[in-house]
Amino acid sequence: MDQQVPFALRGRNPDVLTCIANLSNDEVFTPPEFANRMLDSVAEAWAAANNGADIWADSSVKFLDPFAKSGVFLRAITRRLTDGLASEFPDLEERVDHILTKQVFGIAITNLTSLLARRSVYCSKQANGSHSIARSFNSETGNIWFEPMEHTWDGAKCKFCNAPRAIFHREDGLESHAYAFIHTDDIAARIAELFGGDMQFDVIIGNPPYQMTGGGGGTNDSPIYQLFVEQAVRLEPKFLCMVIPSRWMAGGRGLGEFRAEFLGDQRLRTLVDYENAKDAFPTVGIGGGICYFLWNRDNPGPCECTYHRNGAVIGPYPRALDEFDVFVRDKRAVDILQKVVAAGERSFEELVSGDTPFGLPTNFSDYKRDAVPNDTQVLLYANVATKRVRGAMSRGAINKNQQLIDVWKLFLPVAGSGRERERSGVDIVLGPPIIGEPGSVCTQTYLVAGPLASKIEAESVQSYLRTRLARFLVSLRKPAQHVFRGMYRWVPVQTWDRTWTDADLYKKYGIADSEIAFIEQMIRPMGAGDE
Image (tube, rainbow, N blue to C red; front, side, top):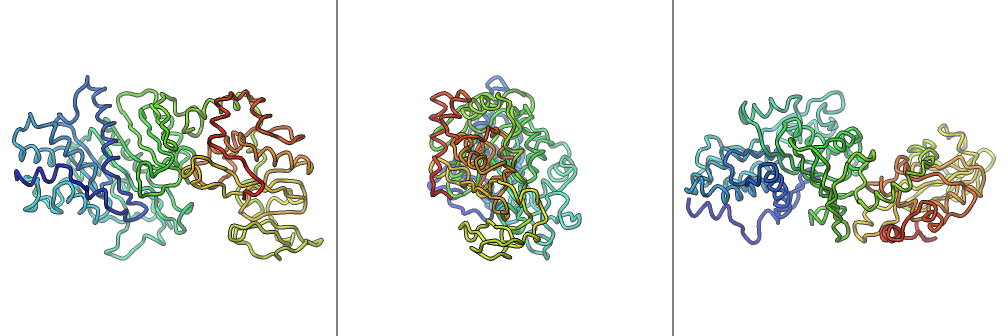
């Protein structure tokens, strides 16, 4: 034992947990360095709440990782407690056994990750095995639990996680991805069932699964990380620390209610946000970035916000998270936004259509490419293999927003920039708008802004949406590539009688020189060749 425990708990080079490839889109492994960063935040908050006490020197504190994968959090906690409890438990074997049986708990998300987590924490896939560094377990699972579960089908979807039955109703022996922590109406009862009726966790920490595949990938995938956050809050730990995608701050399918509640929860005391997820998880690409938060049950107040962007660290700043209906990640942007919003002008959102404005999907093909429309046809704007194309189609096939056919308007590309800002630090945000003449329509590739009274108005709006300021205001509500109607909410309507320039807009809204420099550092000019 004297040889086994130090080998299991001391750092090694390289650390095997830095070398593991992610198994799937819901099993994103946390690098050890990042896990320790999160644990440092917990330790600092614990000390602040307990007169400087060291959480790692407290043998009564209980920790839970309810979505254990590699075991990185539980292993790091065990290492820290092993150092911190040395005076209370001089015997190393007794100390480690106490930590692993009384303080450190996990719920694995799959059978494979349960074995990996036990191997990381107990040095054995069997907690009571001969090579385990714990000595008091009577079961193979120890305190890292996993049993296969099934989804609870309510028609075509799971009532708990919204998983599609067509994909996840599988034969026995295949992984269902029905996670125990969220597949229950009573999480306290579930925890009592797993670990005992009197179990109350002081700290819940970890990295939950992020999404449930909806069948097509990308925007067809439904986020589920918010379900884990909500369940963890219901357990009322003293501290909750989790790493999740940052997309919840301004978008994400079905995240509106979660965002409103989370931004209004004053127990959210620390938020550390990375615009580029690779700054936190070097081997993972996560559109919209990644963040971790610290929730403090007994000490509500302003949230200390830190934003990592393009090598710069902005903050920490104390902020009220619910100042707007979405979270503006960069404090410098808030100051600019407040100047624009203070003017109280009509929102450009009111001019923008919803998705699929004329009822024509992106892959619509019943048109003649490059043809000139006749009296029974309209001009169609579409995209084929990312290239803008035009053609003639039957007017009679249009049964949606017919009032927008025979007016001037703009076609606004739904696909804006993707991870351009993450890679280069600057962003174009929107694709160039196209002027739509009377008698024209578009596929789902575009939204429509209109109706507009004349070609002069259409050209004015087009010039406006090419300005850096207008695109900057869109970017504050745009968490990923696609640009939908609501993302134009903070763009004010102007008078459409001129060609707009940034100089005009900066003067109108009193944008200071330093703020201009910030905008132009973030948003690149839109050239004639941009598409």
